[in-house]
Length: 338
Image 1 (cartoon, helix red, strand yellow):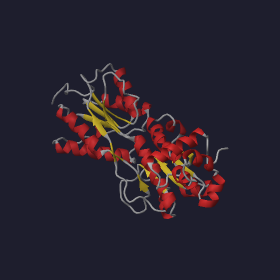
Image 2 (cartoon, one colour):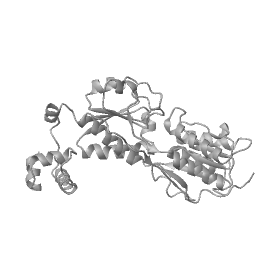
Image 3 (cartoon, one colour):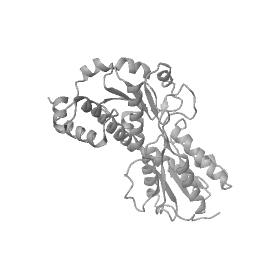
Image 4 (cartoon, one colour):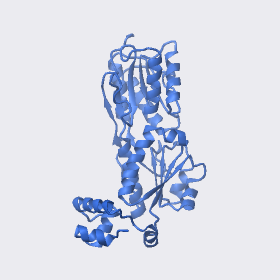
């Protein structure tokens, strides 16, 4: 097995520089760090986790808790892309990830039981009371997307910025003449749903339109439920002329339902999809999208947690990572102006 000394000799630097570079610490230039990381990969070097744990009082493992079923987690573009971001940072910083799906017991107990240095909770409901003991126990922890309030009981959270892009999307549809605009949301106790419905309601109000609850149904974030809910919307006495979808899976189900009814996009129905991946990039017609930077969110969450683990302090502030609204060919003038 290769050693730090071998890497140091090949890189023409000290062993301490190699250690700092591989552990993501300061004091190493980007060029030298990249050279050292490349050498470590080429030499198949990995640190002795037992020795590191004895010295640092850490085990080099991050607990990643996803409070969802495994079936949904492993088929969801959102989770696959946020895991890409998390794993990129964790690997670079020399940590490993212990993934737990649908943990039903105390998250704090998991921390003590499983020997991890900190905990990431991804996809939490904002009323998930298992999260609060993490803060109360002083456990390094980060949640995505976090909570809708600023209670001191809440752990540090990392979020995408969802209000502006969704407000822009709804306003765009209104400017095209649409008045019956639906928005298929996720769980009602999800921060993703709450932030977006606020933007939706504000855009309607600012343009002098009335909010109608029947146009904002909730779903379980799945393809099947997107299909079902879109069918219910189209069966309303006054069906929507435009629809927004909260995530990739809902969007796929919605588009399948529209196709099954032989409705033409955007001639008969305008569609805006929210996406974390490029799964719908080649749809015909090209889709107007709200792109959520999920990989960047995963990277920011992992970086923040590792900083907490290694310094004992939370980052002062983590700016929201902006989503972007892009107009393409799936939105057009309202076919039945009112």
